[in-house]
Length: 106
Length: 119
Image (cartoon, rainbow over all chains, first blue to last red; front, side):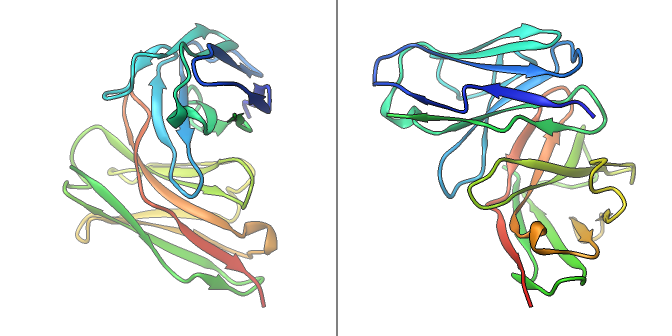
C-alpha cells in the first residue's frame, strides 16, 4: 500500500493569505498526485491532477508542484470560498489512496 | 455532461451485505477512457478509496477491503454496483461513486449516499 500523509491537519488563515499545503507519499509516485477540495455536505471536486495540471474551470490562484514523494498545493490569495478541506490522492498504483485531509479554516 | 447517482438502502444490519448502485446518465458507461470508482467517507473523517472497474470488467480493490468487496458493471443498464459483505458499524459512511478519466483523475462524482450499519 502507498500511504499518503498531509500536513498540517488544519490551518487557520485569512482572506488574501498565501497558503501551502503539503502531501507526502510513503513510496515514490512520480507525478501521479491529485488534489481535491471538499466543502461540508458535498462531494469532492478535482483541483489539480498529475501534480501540477490545473483542472478545467479551476481558478489560477490554485497551483500544484512536486514529484516522487513530496508535493504541495498552493493557494496564492485565499478567497472566502476556498475555506474547505483539501485531500491529496495518489493514482500511481492500481490501488488508490487519499491523504487524511487538511482543513483550511478562517 | 455525465452525471452519476448513487442508490440503495440507507440502513443495513450488521453482518449483512451492503449493496449500492451508481446510475450513469449523459454518457455511455462502456465508451471512452474511463474507469468507475467507489469511495466512502465516515462522518467527520477522510476519504477512503474502495475500488474501481473498467468497462472491460477489470477491477482493482483496496487491499484493506478486497476480501469483502465486489464491484460489477452492467453496460445494458448503464450502471455499476458495489457489494460489501459482512458489514459492521465501521462501514457506516457516505458512499460516493465517481468517474475516473484516464490520465486525469476522479473528475465526476455522485452526490453521495449515507449508509448506516445498525441493528
